[in-house]
Length: 252
Image (cartoon, rainbow, N blue to C red; front, top):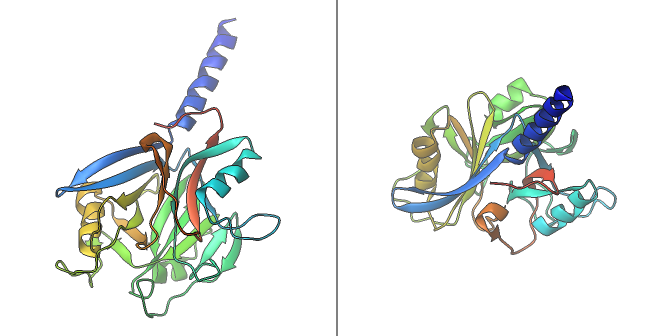
């Protein structure tokens, strides 16, 4: 009997741990508010989402992702837009979903934020997730189960992107991701007010103290975080990142 109870206790503890693999909170830095979802990548079912598996049509919304997960008995614990895209919602740079490459790596400079080098790749592997600068990614070619390229990098090896200006008047609601050195934690952040790149990058470098961080977008930045009562809606999106949890689990 005690062995049965011990087994049930262990299973229950693992289930509870899985439900707590993502924690969202409102945080303040330099008088500005940010919503932050911290993911334990060693336990979370962290994925990228772009298309309907059967039709190949873009999902476009958090609601569509949630409906897709219901077929697995799961639901969204958290989600965010995760990279820039063309008018047909196809990814601008490298995109890999469940091991299948949809678009290739882009290492040349160009117009817009994506081409403000260095840019980078958000790479999800077994038990870890990493932000990797694009040229470094091209050299090492890690085996990402999911990957989304975006740009610019916000923090590179603990330093801000060299082209960020302290007093830049280019201000948007911005979102991005930072990762720990060992890949065990990922922080997904969206600003509550319009900020420039320098301000947004400092949140990752100085407040979260992450060594690597990547910008996702600014004009369409959105968050799905039931724990914060956030269910942002708007124009259809391209790549999205999210954590799938059991439908009967809760998220802190």
